Length: 613
Image (cartoon, rainbow, N blue to C red; front, side):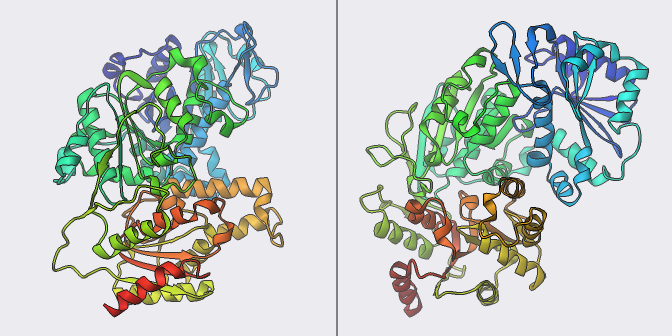
């Protein structure tokens, strides 16, 4: 008998019972498959929730979507992954084939890092995960005829649930024989993801909260709050504490949303520090756009233009009654959010008695969102004053003073300045922070050598060093030099130099000045960048390299900021906010390499004064 997760007893207690087709298929699988197979029923995959996943060690994975639909009520004029239509009103819905294919894509691009890396190395690894759709009220012949022009997804009806036909399906899905590609490392990666461990109290640590933070951590129903403060004031620590408190109160799913996709791993680590028991499966941590895509896929709502659809505050109105709402929604980086997104979250995903809390810092408004008359982000569903955190825990006195001077120099009359900040007491035995500013047109080799010299002078451990720049170009060049000249491993939120050159060759773009104008090249490059960002972790033990955008919300013991190729960034009008965001990532040492002397007027006097004192 196959192994079932969760157990049948737990499945019986699901708040929303299994559909008849789901239960019928599950019963068949449990009795047809032996104990070499593992069946995962409606697993929580950080927002995705496929109906069934079958895993067989050393063989592969099969994702199954189950539909109790009568196909006579639908039209499928184009076939393949194209939208279906409802006969009663000609309304457009997402095809089940597109749904299950999206679940598969997300396993590669969002959820399992090793699977993502294997696919980059060998495109045949995309066959490790297979997909199927089971139509409970249709024969296999009728279902296959209706779902025409299908290339890879296996289609089956109720008459296929017999030993002979289902064994044939398992053979086609590569689950009847061993696969060298689905080795033990990959199997264990799947198992850890599909069966996340319980977090126990002993895994956390004794976190010291200020009185203000302690008040903001308290979870209450029907609460709406907004929290602001300078970088390093503990917003993420408060968010993590509030999230765990919300789960402890409700025992329900907690949704944590960011704008920056790399921030989810940083938040995950902060949750891990909270000394309390909780199941990881009850926390969904993602960014707004990925959340939107996931929910649209799960509820079968189709769109033509994704970015336009994501800005429609009533996009989910057709499925409003079907949506399982959240008792708790916490939004980080709210200064990057559009008001339409916040309205959509409250109107369609927040429970009637739910709590909705947002966290932000308007001075990190790197995308130029419109501020309110009070110079703060506009939060349509939360009136009144902001809760202020004004004690800095992250930054040394030197870096804190630089951040305050930067505010005074560039943000006066734009934002409310943080003039009443309190610096947390520094350990008297700790070395004071170092600040250095270099300005001249350095090339990549010279920049790399400068960084290497500073690493030696400051005796910086690789895990404590982060290199940031506004764009991927210089980061890619420096990452290559760390691996091939310094022979160091790296953690990199983007593509490698080798991968970039390989894509240029693949699309015959070696001699093009603007290769990103090629849509296929751009799409493939973004796929790699997105995958690396999603699996960018704080404590990897290596040097970390990233664009400033991807490092928003994070922190670094020692930070090198390289200002090169600045003219190519899209948000030129928000350049000061971008640089401010970068320098406030530094907990201690801050080194700025300004290849265009853009900020010489501000940083040169500070560097001179630092050396003199």
